[in-house]
Image (cartoon, rainbow, N blue to C red; front, side, top):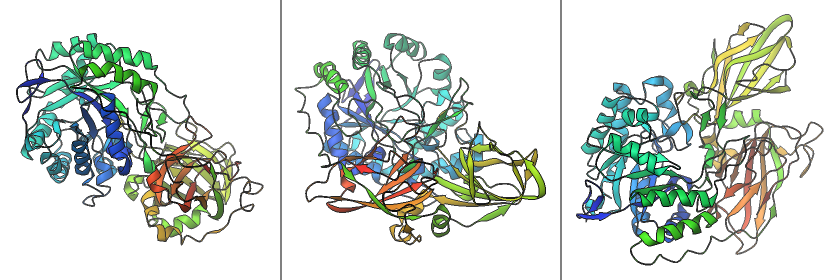
Amino acid sequence: MADFTVGDQDFLLDGRPVRLLSGALHYFRVHESSWGHRLRMLRAMGLNCVETYVPWNLHEPEPGRFHDVDAPGRFLDAVAEAGLWAIVRPGPYICAEWENGGLPHWLTGPLGTRVRTRDGAYLGQVERWFRRLLPQVVQRQVTRGGPVVMVQVENEYGSYGSDAVYLGRLAGFLREVGVMVPLFTSDGPEDHMLTGGSIPGVLATANFGSGARAAFETLRAHQPSGPLMCMEFWCGWFEHWGASRVVRDAGDATAALREILECGASVNLYMAHGGTNFAGWAGANRAGELHGGELQPTVTSYDYDAPVDEFGRPTEKFWRFREVLAPYAEGPLPEVPEPPVRLAGPLEVEFTQWAPLGDVLEALGGEETERGVPATFEELGVGRGLVRYRVEVPGPRQAYPLGVRGLRDRAVVWVDGVRAGSLTEEDCFLAEPVAGPAVVELWVESLGRVNYGPRVGESKGLTGGVLHERQYLHGVRSRGLRLEAFEDAGAVRKVGFRGVPGGSGGAGGSDGLPAGLYSGEFTVAEGGSGDAGLELPGWGRGFVWVNGFCLGRYWPGVGPQGALFVPGAVVRDGVNEVWVLEVEGGGGEMTGAVG
């Protein structure tokens, strides 16, 4: 057991000044089988601490239904075994380029902008969640012989609001459940962020990617004493679908890290190892200065151009950081672990079965509801997945433009069973007008809930209505298909598969690759299993599973990501089962490879 405190200028461990050399590694973005290896990589880079968020929505997908809620405790045990300290950031909001910033959709749906405030209904849910989550953190504090040295209050709140009463209530909750280690806040080094996001008695830290001296000068103007810390040193960055790759020069990042350390400050590398947004949990941003513009969905990979890449391998940045960090270590640095085993490949994925989306929805979807206006994803209880909306155009009437208002985020439209095109929030009318009578189906997909800015918590689906000319169409039938439904492998295998269109390995017939659920296999030789990348170069957009484990979203046509990371722990020697839920359809070829 030890005593970790905040001194006038330094962090103190049993009264002795210490510097936190931390790295972000999110347990929920790394397969549990790889936790130990990734933590050893951080130690070998010269770090003495690891930082992680806790995503509320992952662990409580429905009110009162908990999923793997003990994972944070298991991760902290792995941290202790690796000989590292731990910083825990439990939210309730985490940002993290994560779906809805970690807030459950069933909470933000009804409460809207009341979340992240002193609102009683919101705080009541937060307190209930904290009392379920935090005992496993409390019992692993450094004061009890565990690795946890600090716990965060909210996250970058000054980028969102200024409710000091709310922050004070959160700090009180943390103390009530037994958190005794120092509490902290983290915000950008700007006056409005620090005044909005920090509160008396709680250590304020700063987040930035460069300009350490200027950033700490601003922090000191708001907090004259206490240790300096960059809680998020952005040594890389995340990527959006349809945008260019983001790479930060290793020399530039190293110089920025050196400047932080020369200021006498502690640091947390964000990210030290990024990992992967498995199972469609990637969030999204809004473009524009006031964050109200075009949706920018985050890719499946969370490599982040980090020192330890998505596959767990050291990069040039790793070696350069190791050189800078080594003089601050107590003793020689550990040897760098061997890289994880790679799959002996590439191996072709052979697809032999297919089921149209309608059959998949019939087998795995929720109940259909009919209302005057469309039901949102939140009203249907859909977090990640699709919703099929059906509405009739009355007739007879001439052809008029058909479109939608309030679409979030993308719809594939069918008119009388014929694919008529795709719509987005910005491009919201079909190219060709529609005459009545007609039956219109809109398959709407959420590309990730916004995780940062004033539009956190916005609803998904058809949040306005379907328009024919300027007239709303009413009597909309809505039915959801949740990604969680694919966790029942037995149910998936009963969706009514048939032979693939155009034959095995074909292009899917004259109309190209149709939407639907595809089933295929690849075979691994004895002893050949390992980490891999899966590519689907001719496909449109959708999700893929290997042996029931959801790798996340693919969208090769827009990039920048091509291959999806496949953890070696989900690959087995012999036959491996692959499901591909193709949502967009199109003219591609049905090919896939793992290697």
